[in-house]
Image (cartoon, rainbow, N blue to C red; front, side, top):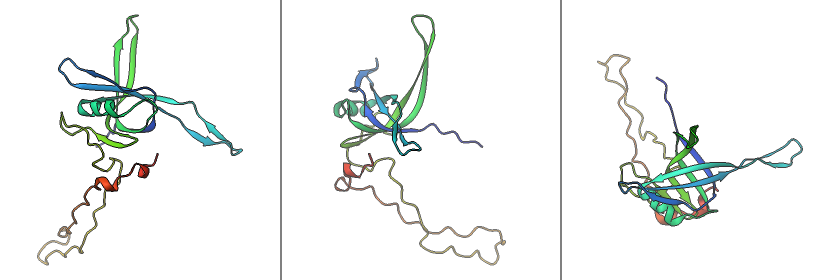
Length: 181
């Protein structure tokens, strides 16, 4: 079975202040754009800057309100989300398309904001590790026990005990200087 993945992560600067609107049913939606660029060294060792790329970003619900309240043009941000393409017919009758990032996580200069897993969950500001932080790997604390002699040779071994995952760092452990941008 093939697995599909629609995830995107960008680090860049806001090109404009977030614009907050509300849907007819009262749900908040904010939009902004993030500029990214690429830099590399040519064969002579000179740094070459590529033209910037601009990414339209949309955030919903409490995350939208938090982004609107805390971010401004020029802020450096990390955005994690999925790509979504919208199509419509313009006033001139031509078909138009727009691909945007629907953000689940936005990390600005001084905060971590995440969309909740359930509708209406708000941002978590400065209280959890960024979503791109590595998760602890589980290691067995004891060797697996051998299968009883009456079991067939191909029977799986008993599962090893796994330690509880480490807790998220406290507010005191999260520092903007630790974020790699």
